[in-house]
Length: 309
Image (cartoon, rainbow, N blue to C red):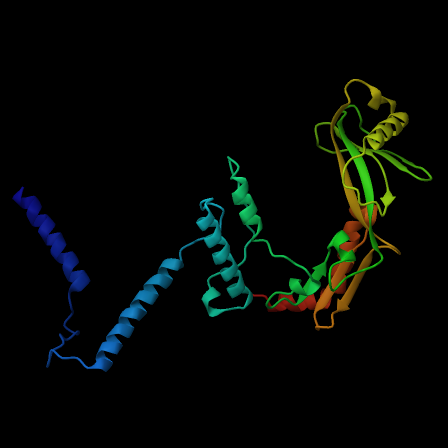
């Protein structure tokens, strides 16, 4: 027992010396007086404050992120919103206080859905862009404008040539359908599109209705689509075809065709517009994107040359 106590005492002594001991090269200060001047006190307080600041900085260098894990009560949501807004403002301004902050793409998975109040609160963090100029944050050198139907009314774009083209489709399960079939009528479009690697689902359409803003499905159009597609491919009429859902979309269209164009705004900012493909967005999208990037190649090359990790 006494041997153990001796060992513990020896180890404790070593630790005490390491933490608080002084080497021969560190003289012990001699106090000439117990009084201190105000300037000495200020220096001591400044040193203490500096040590505390350093401690806080070291602590905050640990990994942290902004997440939806906080509570759903009113105070928690208010604090989150206030803190998020403050941090984003500091980042956008390039403030010294934000040198350890950055905007990073984030994905969260929930085994159980959070409350609706929490979801509504989190969506309020999203930046509201009411004009094209709002997209230019601190240090932004170029913006690609791909706002789709919003190009009609967005300040800084306000393209009067833009309009929606309504479409309605039916998603069905029809494993026997393996071919793509289309019929281009005078005033209608009919198509059957099997979805690759989808366990037998097929898209049936459809409609091209310029200027129609109605976002709900019309039952009469659903019946028309079924009739027209079965007329094109009889196998769709068998008992295995199962309707999964009906969907409506508003294709962003533009008179005279899509706009892919480089523009310098009155504020001196560079914008590459890329919108208005209408119903050809899938097949034209990659080509449009390539042209858009090519238009900005001089600026992008400069950005790549200046980028640092």
